[in-house]
Every structure is written in C-alpha cells, then in structure tokens.
Amino acid sequence: MIMSRLFYNLKQSFVQMGRNKGMYFTTIMAITAMMLILGLFFVSLVNVNMFARSIEKDYNVLQVYMKEGAKKTDTDDVAKQLEAMDGVEKVEFVTKDAALGTLKEEWGENAYLLDNLPENPLPDSFNVYVKNKDAANKVATDAKAIKQVDDVVYYQETIEKLAKASHFVEMGSLIAMAFLIIVSVVIVANTIKLTVFNREKEIGIMKYLGATDSFVRAPFIWCGIIVGIISALLATGATYVIYDRVVDIIGTDVMRILSVDIVSPKKLMRELLTMFMGLGVGIGAIGSMISIRRFLDK
Image (cartoon, rainbow, N blue to C red):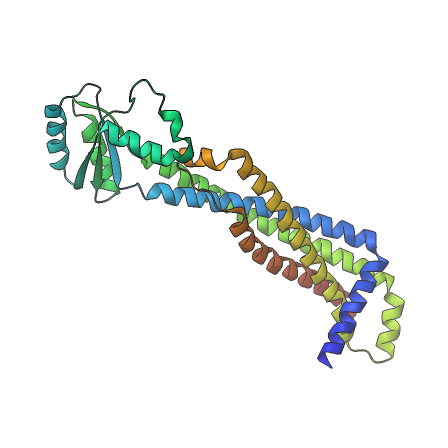
C-alpha cells in the first residue's frame, strides 16, 4: 500500500513536471545557480580554515635568522641568550645546509631547480619553541634586539589576518545561505502555485470525490523534492568542475613549494553533495508545502 502510494505520487509528480517543462527547467536552473554560489563560498571557507590551521601549527615556533658571516662564537652567544629568555622551551640550531636540504624536500620533484644555485642563499638560523602566544610576542621582540640577529619570522600577523578572513568568509557564507535559501523557497513555492492553478479544476473534483488534503498535497511536495535533488546534483557537479579546474591551474607543485595544503576536490565534493541534497530536499518540500497549504486552506 505504501509503495503503491509512493509510485503514484512520483508518477503524478513527473506528469506535472512534464506538463510544465519550461517553468520547472527555469526553477531548477535558478536554484542550481544559487547552490553554486553557496558551493563556492563553502570551498573557500574550508580551504581558508585549513590553511589557518596549518599555520597555527607553527604558532609556537619562531625562526631567528643570523646575519651573513656570523661566526660560531656568535651563534653560541645567540643560542645562550635565546635559551635564557622567559617562555622559551627549546632552541634548535639549523645550519644553512640543513635549511637548504629541508627546502629541497618541500619542493619535491622540483628540487632540481635548487641544484644550479651558485651558492646557498639561506642563512644559519634557530627554531625557537615557546610556551604560548604571549611568550612568543615577547621572545620575538627581544630576539630582534640581539646584535647578531638579522631577522625574526613569526606568524602572528599572518594568523590574525587569516582568522579575520576566515571569519569574514564564514559570516558571508551564512548570510548568503540564509538569503539564497529564502529566495529558493519562494521560487519553488511560486512554481508549485502555478502548477496548482493549472490543475485547480482537477483538484476541486478530487476534493469533491473525497480525496484527503494529504492525498492532494503529496505529488506537489514530491515535485518540489525532485526539483531540489536535481538542482543539488547539478550544483555539485558544476562546483566540482570549477574547483577542480582552479586546483589544476594553481598546480600541486606550486602549492607544495609554498607549503600550502588544499582540500582534494573529490573529498570536498562528497561533503558538498550531502549538504546540497539535504538543502535541496528541504527547500523543495518547504516551498511546496507553503504553496499547496494556501490553496487547500481556501
């Protein structure tokens, strides 16, 4: 009984969509476009957050670079001063040759480009591990004041900027999502409303013969759900194509050289498809119920 009712509702839904192909096609394209915008916000937010988290791993590490031509006595003196600072947990000396070797590992297959350098351009340095953010700020300031130190690299400003960017993208996504969901519900509601008007006499006869509100309502709700599902599939596919193309243009080699991680398009699209399917079904069902309820309440 349940399956036969389901098949009847689905059949009626496709019949209704077939009678109004142009209207439903326009509705699907509009909702797909809105979901596509949400998808682009989503992939941007995920990657910004991922990049921020990868940078935060280095939040407790400062890189202190020695001046060119510094002697061993100079590095020993700087090491002692760094170790004596409050909040410092460990000081690790990195020779210029070791730094170049690490850089080659990060460059992967492109490491051969570094083999033609006339000389090693990297300076000797220290990795200074600190206890917390406050200690890092103090150590960075004090380390810059040491005579033999050329520069101190600390990611505080970068992390703060990324946090602001992540918050901006997140808020923008939420606002855009709320606005686009409302618009999508209105579009579906208007589409179903027009379909109801076209079948007003037929529905009136069904009601006269004893059809319940749920019996009349079900095919229209399924119409909305089908529109939402199709839109979700199209939007996910379009987002995947655009995102995959952007990743190809940037190139994995460039991202490796810059030490930047990016989420795999396939992995991200699975999450996006789940989100869009739920969103599409919700938009379609709610829009349909709003529209048909107004008609049945007359």
